[in-house]
Structures are given as C-alpha cells and as structure tokens.
Length: 135
Image 1 (tube, rainbow, N blue to C red):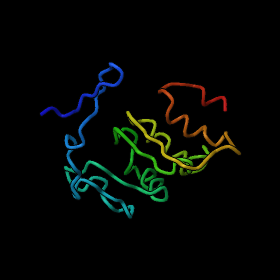
Image 2: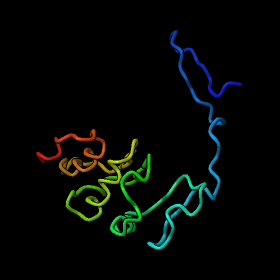
Image 3: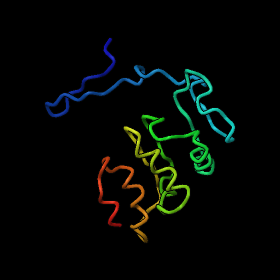
Image 4: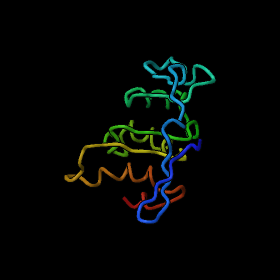
C-alpha cells in the first residue's frame, strides 16, 4: 500500500494523504506546561509543547522559550495578540516569527478595529519585511 489515495476529479489527479500514514501521538510526546519551573522538553521524544498565554511571557523573559526553538507553532485564540505593545504580544512575536510555519486560529471577528490584526499579520509576513514599521 501507498500512503495516499489518488482520486480523479474532472480529469485531475488529487493527492489525498491517508490518515493511517500519520502515526498517533503518544502521551509522552505531548508536554503541557503548567508552571514556569516545568521543563520545556521533559524527554527526547517530546514533539508538542502546549503553553498558555499567561505563562508564555514569563518563560520568554526567563529565556526558557527562545526564537528558533520550535519549527512550527499553532496559536489558538490568536485574536489575543492584538496590541503590539502588550507584554504578551511583544514577547511572543519574535518566537512566532522565527518558526518555519505558524498557524493562527481565531473565531473572533475584527470588524470594529482592523488595526488589531497587524500583530497577527506581521507573524505571517516574510522575514526582513518592513511594512510593519509604518503602522
């Protein structure tokens, strides 16, 4: 067996990965940080680290979390990163910008204050861009 299905939609080949080709995560591969003293990577097999918005700035200040530490980040409730001058946003931006891939998730509309989207957009911008400086 191949690790994907091939479908034909209107004459085009479509690559669909099989879920069975992605191994499930084991409990020891996920680390949920609950205190600043918790190790970021408690073992060599840790693949996922979960940290709250409240704890992250402290870990960054203590240099426990640093830019380049994670190749990928998933940011739930990304609308919480709305003020570039807040401790939360200013400390997390360098960490998130240093990832190769960053997924921002939010179900909160930003119709009233579009300016609050700028911190999220700068995370998604390219390295070395300067459009953020003209805010």
